[in-house]
Image (cartoon, rainbow, N blue to C red; front, side, top):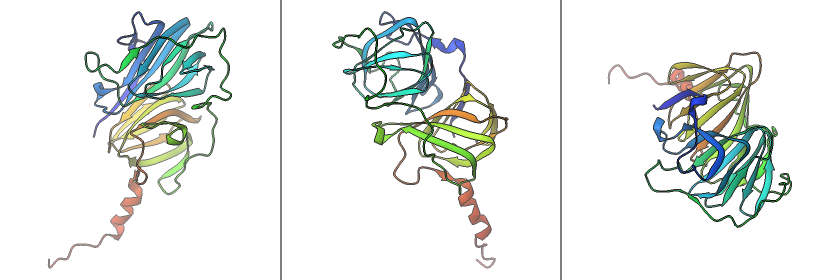
Amino acid sequence: MHYHVGKLDEPLFAVPHGYAGRSRGYQRATLIDRGIDSVHMGVGVARLAPGGSVDTCVHANEKGIYVFEGAIELKRGKDVFRLGADDYALIATGTPHAYRNLGDQPARWFDMQAPQPKPPGKWQDTFFVADEVPWPERAGDLQGIAQAGHYLPRTPIINPNAGVSGLRVFRFMEKEFGAQCFYMMRGELAPGGVRGYHDHPVEESYLALNGEAIMSIEGQDYHLRAGDYVWTGVGACHAFKNVGTEVFRWIETQAPQFPAHQGTRNYNQWERLKAAQIPPRLDA
């Protein structure tokens, strides 16, 4: 099964294809795309220098962004609002949007795009368009803004029968939020916590935020710390164990969205059938 493990490093940052002359102080580190055999995801981390901006553009895909540090102002359609640390927003397919950084610190955010953007030289899926909404002197906060929010742990998704202990997952970007092609969530695994072997009929990405954990993928163990990222393809079996002294936290995406049922195949639930399996007949 296909999977990939990597590290968010400085050499990954560059001005994206098509953004030269359309942006100032903007760079993006591509983490997951077709280069590692993904077919559904375009995942990366973007940054915008103080005073930087990105001109108004539209994509032939939807995009979710989650701010890690600093602050940006986002112009999305007719809405203009500020996103600070742990704020997030969805940009629907074909929605004009632009960014700027009026602060004195760099801003950095995670972004997820699906369907996966096309590579340079193929069918064009990003277009820079006329800016019909002027920037205000200062953008307001998120209050009253649809399809945007501030991350706070809410009711976690927990399956106690799936080889799980100490795990909490908070999905904040899904169909009810307006996303059509992907999920975005935050995960937390307490010290000593585990998530048993499982797989999915969709792709997943993980970006470690803090703490440390061993992630086992297809029989190989990987020690994850802040800045490490992982992609698991359809059917790739994987498991977690927190091996540190603090909560292991990560941001996660899934694409396409889960089916209505049977989105997770927990191995331990099926392995119980081994003991109950009827032996073959010797006289068969």
